[in-house]
Image (cartoon, rainbow, N blue to C red; front, side, top):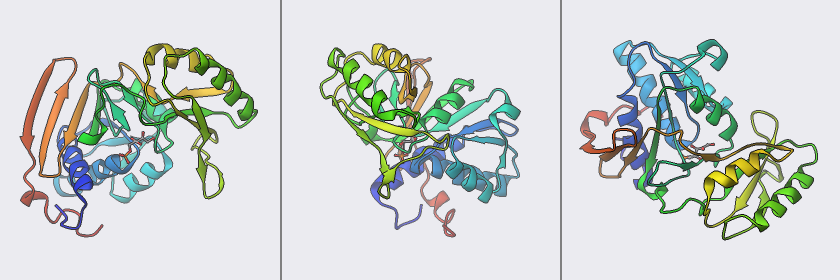
Length: 260
Ligand code: 5RP
C-alpha cells in the first residue's frame, strides 16, 4: 500500500481491492465514480495487466471512462452491454438496510441507470459513510437547466410537508459557475439533515417537472464493503444477511501503484 496515503484513502484502497477481487474473467462491470471507485478502476487495471484477465467496463462518468481506458480496461457503452454482471461504486452515505445517498461526485444519474442494469451492486466505502438515518450528507437532485429556479421553488414547497429536518437548497457550483453533469444538467443539493421517509421523498421528487433523478438509491445495493485504514475489510450482504471480515495483505499490494 502506498505509504503516503492518508488513513481515509487507505480505507478506500482496501475496500476497492476487496471488491476488485470479486470480479471474474469475462464479466461486464459497471464502474462507479468518485475517489473510492477510482481505486477500484486502478485495481482492476492491475488485474488486466498482471493476470491478463478481460473485462468489459461500463463507466458511470467521463472521468471514470478516461481512467479506465488509461489502465487498460475495455470500455463499452451500457447499450452495448445490455445488462451487467456486477457494478461496483462508492457512496456518500449508507444505512443498515444498505440504502444510499449518492451523487456527491455529480454522477448520480448514470450511476443509478447502471446500478439498475446490474445483477449485483456492490458499494465500497470507508466506515465514516455509515449512518443511522440518511440525510446528513446533502441530497443531490439532478435537474434540467431550463427553469431550474422554478424547479427549486417546487422542491421547496414539497419539503414543507416532507419528513425532513432541514430544508435549505443550494445550486451546486464549479469554479464560480453552475456545475454541469455529464448529461448537461445542474444539481440542487438538499440540506435535509435527516430524511425520515426516504421512499416517499424519492418518489415525490421524481414526479416533479424538471427533476431528472435524485440521489437516493433505495433497494439497489446488494453488498457493502467497508474498508479500514489498518487493512481490515467488512463485507455485509443484505440478501444473505451475512457479515464477514478479513484483512487485505498490505505487503502484497505495496508497489502496485508506484506509478500513480
Ligand atoms: C459520485 C458518487 C460517489 O460514489 C460518492 O460521492 C462517493 O465518492 P468518494 O468515493 O469520492 O467518497 O456518488 O456521484
